[in-house]
Image 1 (tube, rainbow, N blue to C red):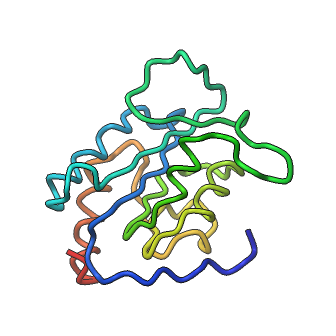
Image 2 (image 1 turned 60 degrees about the vertical axis):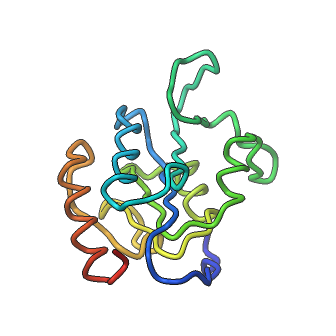
Length: 155
């Protein structure tokens, strides 16, 4: 995690979004699909992966999930959904969690993205754009994100 992130060569503009969501603290992860309409994205432009400390495969979640059980030997992730998530490059990665958790940080570091956004309670090296909004206030987060993406001429 101390290595510098690899540089992603993609044109400016948001066409693909990855979201890493701590569903233990924010259960409405499907709200991220609103970004498709807000940013005029293709329907398959958003990939959401949820993290839950204790995850049961039979739980009825609308998004792909992973848990601590998916960490194998030598820090390798052993979950097909996570590997698929990591196999794509994103223009924007949203780290939607505010607790210092190794599994969430590991996925954040391993995900190739041109621009990473997250919360001020985390290690500032994880994100390029940092917000101080409450995790539960998704509407405010969405508003602030859109405002700063316009400032950065990404929208």
